[in-house]
Amino acid sequence: MSLRPRVRAAPSVGPVLVALDVDRDADPALAVSIRNALGAHLVEPPAPAAGWRLHLTATQLELRRSAARRRPLVAQLVEGPAGARLLRAGTRTEALARAVGLGAGTTTVLDSTAGLGGDTILLAWLGARVTAVERSPIVAALLADGLRRAGLDPRFGPALAGRVTLVVGDARQVLEHASPPPDAVLLDPMFPRAGRTALGRGELQLLRELVGDDDDADELLAVARRVARRRVVVKRPARAPPLRGPAPDVVSRGQSTRFDIYLRPLPA
Image (cartoon, rainbow, N blue to C red):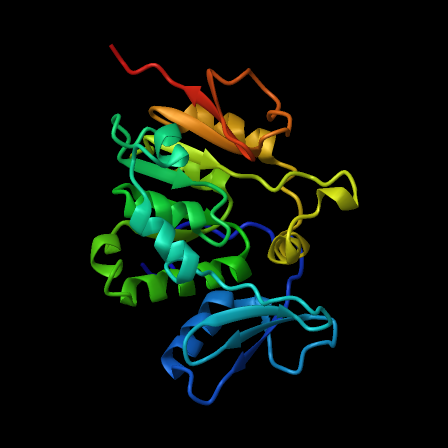
């Protein structure tokens, strides 16, 4: 579950440069790998006082905003509550699994807005082969580290082995070059905020500051509907409007989250 860019990285959104701090007891080979993955997005410390800093500890990679008093961004995929959720999860009990069609013919999923990987790891744990696409190289580095740690966890690593491929790039380009195309495509776009009330919890605020809003989500949906073999699933806040385009074929509603599902008829 390594960082495997397959297409040219998309133009950066949010901050372009980030400094990397490495603890003395951190893995030096891992630090080199992160430096190579970030390339021109990385500057040598010290970074500007208000800038972004990656911090590689002995156990994990963290992202901090130097001037912000918030918890760091970390891809916690199998630790704590995330791991407990995976151990309880089933294809019939998880709304996301039902939405993408796990257990009903879907075996491959392209998570077009992977972010910190919560949906990616859930689908992989439930048996799907997932291509996780993230266009921010900085977020992708966090996700790669989360996948690395998940692979080392004896509870989850053996079952997850070989199920996740992380691609750094523009999901529209990845979809256009997908061979074979995925059974299902998942979109979970960052919805443009209308004001301060649209801001979420601290980690979500940091992520929004880093990557910005997904203003091209409507275009991504159109490409996904053209490419996906079976269905496209758009994950939305329960009261958010649907993305522009045809109405979804199925709407699955929860208390806080809604799945808009666009079906493709199978060939006769």
